[in-house]
Image 1 (cartoon, one colour):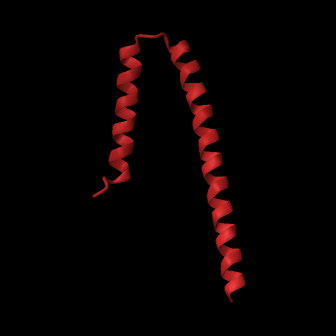
Image 2: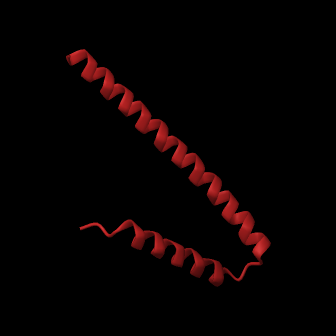
Length: 67
């Protein structure tokens, strides 16, 4: 059984906070690292959305052709 998304998010946030604390880097360096990661997440999310839109469009075309 999958865990509720709220628990997954809470655990992710906790792990990120622990990693930041353990790194002992100054906040300006942490900010730069997190910004780079954030940009990667944005690109991954955009790719995921584009793929979902493509699949949705292809599915719609198949349904239209079968009717």
